[in-house]
Image 1 (cartoon, rainbow, N blue to C red):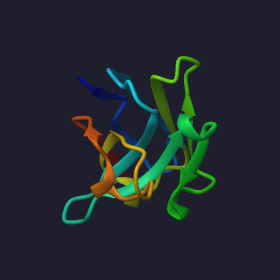
Image 2 (cartoon, helix red, strand yellow):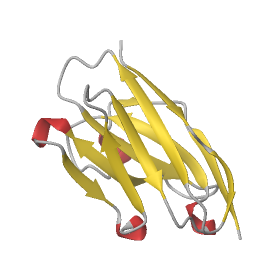
Image 3 (cartoon, rainbow, N blue to C red):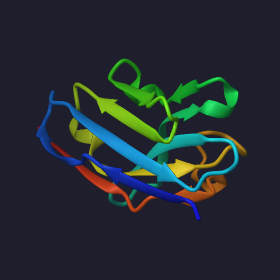
Length: 123
């Protein structure tokens, strides 16, 4: 059974930093882990992803380019989202998701989800 557990959310002021972590277990197929976020009243969107199955290829949304970075521990079961220069518009619930099919940013093609961790950025 696949489980994804996120941690590291919190409240920060604009310009601050946070690091989110996702511990995965039970993945017996290819590891394709990504971070998604959802703000109140908005659709869930892809933030960054790393596909071990594709030689640790990384993907990111334009909105976080240069500010966020994804990394993976050597055992490939833990991924981190390093968030710097946070903005108010980064506020939302951040989810870790596993799935290799379809577009990395499409939440409809992910197979498994974590419970989410809240990030609040005050301006």
